Structure formats: C-alpha cells, structure tokens
Length: 229
Image (cartoon, rainbow, N blue to C red):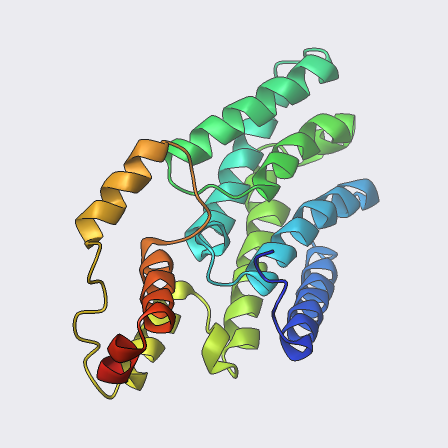
C-alpha cells in the first residue's frame, strides 16, 4: 500500500497538521459564516482537503491551484444550480457532475470540491443570504487558509515542503553530483506516451514516477547505484 511504509513520525506530523489547519479555518470562518449549519458543512469539505494536503502534500490533487480552484469553482456551480430551484435530489447530482467536469477542464481536480458543490444544495434557504458571496466567503477563504497553513506548517520539514514547486527547488539544491544516465531502459517521452494511453487521471506527477523508476534501477542494478551515488 502506498504510504503504508511511512514512519510513525510522518503519520503524526500529517495528523497534527490537519488538526491545526481545521482549527484555524473553523475559527476564522466563524467571523464570516453566520449560519451554524453552513459552517459545519464547510468543515466537512475542508476536512477532506486536510487529508490530501497534509498526508500527501506532493500529490497533484493537493497543490494550491487544485485546492483553491477546486473549491471555488465547485462552490460557484453549487450556487448556480441551487438558484434553479429544482428538486434537491436532482440538483445535487447536477451540481457534482458539473463540478467534476469543470475542475477537470480547468486542471484543478480536487475531490473535496464535490462536497463543496453540494453545500448550497444541502443548506436550503440558509444559502440565500450568501448568494455568490459564498464562493469567496467562506468557501474561497477556507481554501486559501488551508493552503497557507500547509505552506507554513510543512516549511520546517525539508522532505515535505509545500507546494510541490518548493519541494522541487529543495531537491535541486540538495544534489551534489549529477545523476548521470538514471533511466537506461526508458525515456521521459516513453513515460509520457504510456501515461497518455491510460487516458485517466493518475494522482502522481511525472517527476515522482521518474524518481521511483530511478530508485528502482539503483536497487536492481548495484553497479548503476555505485556510479550514480
């Protein structure tokens, strides 16, 4: 299982980060979200986000644009569908379906966005006082706070800097020797072509896949490992 071999320290760091981020969002949005049920529904959505950005901070679905775009676009769609005044059962299905499609095209896939799209539908008349402001407050504000808390919290841990672009810079600076021919049997173009044939979203970056392949090659070919170290 991916992540099953992580250390106890890594698991505890992830859990503490998620707890602190939810506390922050719950506290700050309390000044904006007047309706108690609206706040509770939002926290359910943000709780799912916390799992992604603190347990898998380098995953493609956990990056800032995915978090902020995923929540705000889905919130806008949820509000729009709610305004149609149709049966909640149908409205919920339409809102989630449109949200998935939109965030897919906008390259901000974020699973908790599906929950955010449902909030206006499940809130009933309570959402009427917000209107499209709900996209910014509290949905957008909550997403932004989650991202900022992840950036700050993960900064002291070099191996889990957030976002992924910061982690890449740390990795480049830590290299003392060129890696050399790390991919003797496969090229980057081969990998990209293979991914395109799958034709579905894979929650891992190309860089991570190449890194995994590089490490596997070192284990499989000790001579290569000696040459690269």
